[in-house]
Length: 181
Image 1: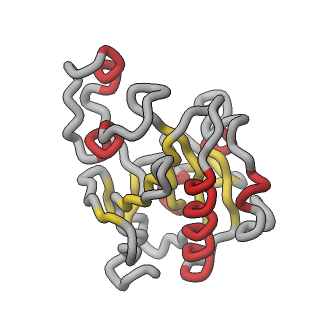
Image 2: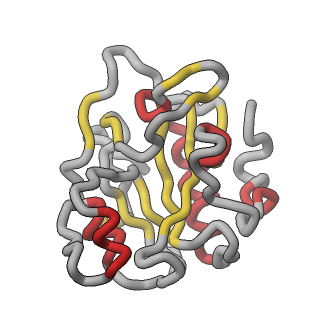
């Protein structure tokens, strides 16, 4: 359940500096589903957490050098174990969508909640992830005027491919009966 300060009870809070204020009077109407693993295809480490909090050491892995200086975040990260971490309060703008548009509106970060799933575009996601994602979407829909749930690939076509064909949209339809309502 969200608190007045924008944090969800029952999830681990890891505040990210990579956020800012949404535009005045901007209504949060979209949930964007992403996938991430660092290094790609490696799960259960703390690299994503360190990336979102600007503590990732670019010398630790050759892939990390490509991320040096990158300032990104998401509101939530759902680990393969089902653990949920929150990096940005709901009323703040996380930096997850990049150049994007949805229903003719650009700058999706302004009006969306970003949820990262630990995974890859090609790989499957775990049962605990689907369960936690469904619960999180339900909480967000109860508290915010959400009108759609979209893949990162849908709001940034040609630039992004996540969460990819390995993501089973039917698994969240019980809570989110229509991706685009």
